[in-house]
Every structure is written in structure tokens, then in C-alpha cells.
Image (cartoon, rainbow, N blue to C red; front, side, top):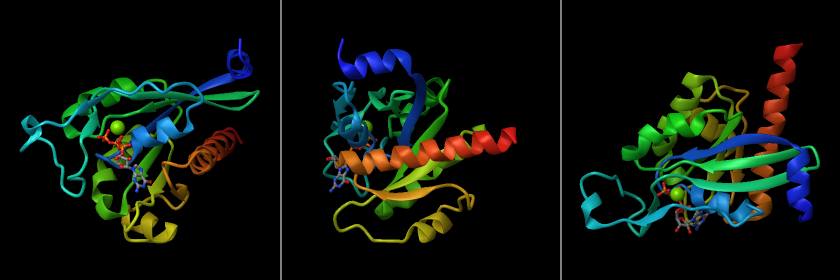
Length: 193
Ligand SMILES: Nc1nc2c(ncn2[C@@H]2O[C@H](COP(=O)(O)OP(=O)(O)OP(=O)(O)O)[C@@H](O)[C@H]2O)c(=O)[nH]1
Ligand SMILES: [Mg+2]
């Protein structure tokens, strides 16, 4: 058994969703950070999706997640995160309830070129009272905003964490997850107090 596998057997296992609109970098984030070979369910975007999927802003994208992404990261000997990436296309909304079952928190990834694409994910978690952090994936050439500007544009609760990240970079993704974990711990302890 490898070190990370034996740690995973002993530690608390927490399910986290990696969510957000189409093409914001959910699959990229799960793949960057996972310590096991990530499970991806990518399919080619064909012309059959024309008129059904909204490809505006991400016309160069050739594949899309059709079920989920799955990965794992061991934070320390006490905590292992199981990451479930959601599909981004509207036609897969029916999977979200199932994917969210048992999740303790979520990361909502946002792309500043298409912030409105992450509104639906934020609504979904707010309606269910599931804590989330917003991770702004800083694509090359995308408008740069401060975290406060993003918080305001997304009309977030003042306590909701917002972090800037690069979904291709492991340590940047780890910072996002640590921010979410700290937020979850703070919420849990303040509701107990
Ligand atoms: N420049 C840049 N490209 C990125 C970044 N993150 C993701 N990409 C690219 O953007 C594209 C979309 O990334 P995905 O990870 O497939 O996005 P997704 O949110 O899983 O997409 P769906 O599952 O289709 O909703 C891919 O081609 C990535 O290589 C980033 O931080 N910077
Ligand atoms: Mg994906």
C-alpha cells in the first residue's frame, strides 16, 4: 500500500464538488490536483450540440464532461478530499443533485470573461445551504478583477471566500482547497459555538 493510500484509509474522507459553468476549468483543476489518476468522462463536442449547448466564449473547446470528474488529494494524515467535478453543460443539470449528495462543500470556478456562466452553480449551492468558495480561474488575456470586485459582481455573501487561481497549477489549486477547508471548519465551529 502506498503512503497516500494508507493515509487515505485512516483519515476523515470529505466529498467536495468542483463546479461552475461550461469550460471554466473544472476538469483541469481535478486533473492538476489529484494524486491518483483522475477519472474523466470527456466526450467530443460535435455539431449535434449546435443550438443546444452554449459555446460562446469557448469556441475552441473540443471536449466536454458528460458525467463527472473524480480525483483525490490527501491534505494531511487527518484529512482526505474526494473531488467530484460536475459537467458544465446545461443539459446535464439533472446529474447535479446526485453528485451533490453527501458533499460537505464546493468550489465554484469562475471565468472573468463569462462570469454569468457561474451564476447557476452559485444559486444551486446557496439554495441548498452548501458552503462554497469561488475560485477565479485566471485565463490568459481575461479581464483582471480584484476578489472584492468578483464578490460584488457575483453578489456573494461577504464571508464567502474568493480566490484567484490557475487551474493548471497544482499548488494554486491546493490553495483554493485549503481556503475552502478553512471556511468549512470556521462555519462548523461557529455554528457549534
Ligand atoms: N489559459 C488557460 N487555459 C485553461 C485554464 N484552465 C483550463 N484551461 C483550458 O481551458 C479549457 C477548458 O478546461 P476544462 O477543464 O475542460 O473545463 P471544464 O470546466 O471541465 O469544461 P466542461 O466540462 O465542458 O464544462 C481546456 O482546454 C483547458 O486546457 C487556465 O487556467 N488557463
Ligand atoms: Mg469538464
